[in-house]
Each structure stands twice: as C-alpha cells, then as structure tokens.
Length: 122
Image: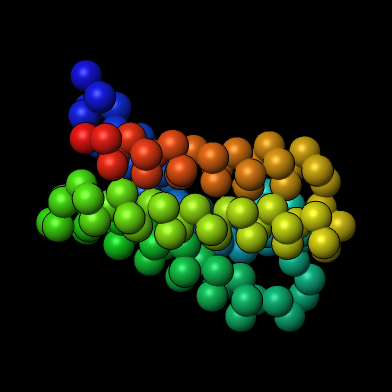
C-alpha cells in the first residue's frame, strides 16, 4: 500500500515542478505573479533561469525514479526540499504575502519532505 503512494506522490511532485518550469518559460509574468513576487520589465533573464531550473529538476526527478531507483529519488527529494524553503524566505523578503509564502512554498517543502520519507520507507 505504501509503495504506490510513495511513487505516486514523487511522480506528481516531479511533474508539478516540470509544469512550473514550463510555465515560467512560456508565461513568465503570470508565473512570477503566482510565485508571489511579480516580475519587473527587464527580469526576463531571471525568469528564464528559474524556468529552466525548475523544468530540469522535474526531469531529473523523473529520470532518477524511473532509471536509477527509489533510494536515489528519496535523496533527491530530501535535497530538493531546500528550494521551496528558500523560496518561502525570498517571497517574504521581497514583499510577497505570508499566505503565498507559507501556503504555497512552505507547504511544498513539507510535501517534498513527506515524499522523501515515504520513498525511504519503501
């Protein structure tokens, strides 16, 4: 019972970050607003970097899970949980709302950590 939940959550989280990366590449202004810190004109390079970073993390997560194994994905999730934790701080330091910082970014960090724990238990 635990195995399908662990794999399912990992796949969903990997696909979600891949989707977020693609959104930053295709709709950068809307994606930045959803992130919690609206972009200014001239920020396109940073938005592209964020999009590529997120899309790459999603692809690496999927590749690890399907080609290397559950233990590698568990370690990956544990390390990657740092990103949404830092995103929480970034949103708070740059005028974003606490609702977005904690409701999106911190909650994502918790979900990624839960995923890591479940994967380690499999």
